[in-house]
Amino acid sequence: MRSPDMNEIVGSHDLLLVTLDTLRLDVAAELAAAGRIPNLAAHLPGGAWEKRHAPGSFTYASHQAIFAGFLPTPAAPGPHPRLFAARFTGSETTAERTFVFDAPDLVSGLADAGYRTVCIGGVGFFNRQGPLGSVLPGMFQESHWEPEFGVASPTSFEEQVGRAEQVVAGLPADQRLFLFVNVSALHQPNWFHLPGATREAGDSRATHAAALEYVDRHIGRLFAAASSRRPCFAIVCSDHGTAYGDDGYTGHRLGHETVWTVPYAHFTLDQGATR
Image (cartoon, rainbow, N blue to C red; front, side, top):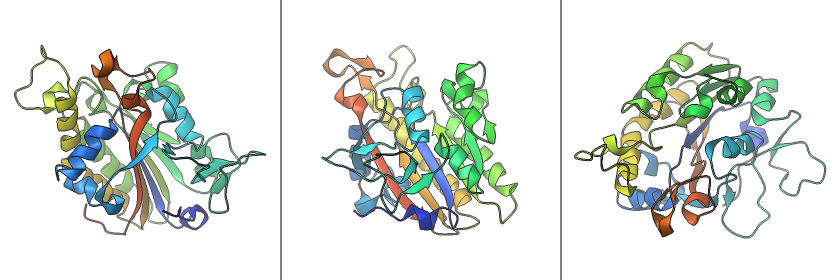
C-alpha cells in the first residue's frame, strides 16, 4: 500500500495517534477476524491489522522512538519510507511523501507547524508523578492524566475519551490538533474486563482480549471527537506486545515474538465521522 503524502495531510487535517499499550498482534488479529471489534475493524484497510515490528520492547523506549518519527516498522524487507522524520543527513527512510521536521521530536515539529499538541496519558510513564513519568508528557503543550485513566481503573478508556471530548470542545475552530492517547486498558491488570475472571486467577490472553473488546465499545466516541472539526488522519497501533506464559515468558521488556510483533493501522476519518 502506497504511503499517504504527509506533506498534504499535515496542515490540512487534525492528527490522532492512539497507542493501545501492550496489545498483542495475534489477539488483535483474531478479534478482528471474528467480528469482535467492529468499530476498529471498520477502519482497518481490508478489515485487518498490518503486522509490524515494535521500535521498543516496553512503553518508555517505544514511545521515545515513536515520538522521534519511528513508528512500528512493516514486518517485511525494506526500506520502508516513514510518515514523519526529523531532518537527518543520510536517512534511508525519509522520502518525498515524508513530513520532515526540524525539531528533536515529532510533537515539537507539529507544534512548529501550528498544531496544538495534547497528550492524554494512560500507563505510569505518562502520570507526571515524578521525573521519569514527566518526560513523555512533557513533550506536549498540554497533558492530562488522572488515576481514573490508569491501569487499575476498570473504566480507564471511557474516562480518557471523556477528557478528549472536553479538549476538542475547548479548541477554537481554526486551531489544528495533534491528539495523542495512550490507552492503558490492555495493560496488566486487565482481569476485571472479563466477566467471571478473578484477581486471584490474574490476567490471561482471554482477559487481554476482553480488554480490547472494551476499548472497541468506546473508541467510536474518540474517532467522532477527533474528526468533529475537519478530516482527521489517525494512527492506531500497539507500542509493544506482552507475553502470557508463551515459551515460559511473562510480561514485556524482553525479546519474544509476542512482544516484538504488533498490530498497526493508519486511515483518514472524514469530518463528522460517527464511529
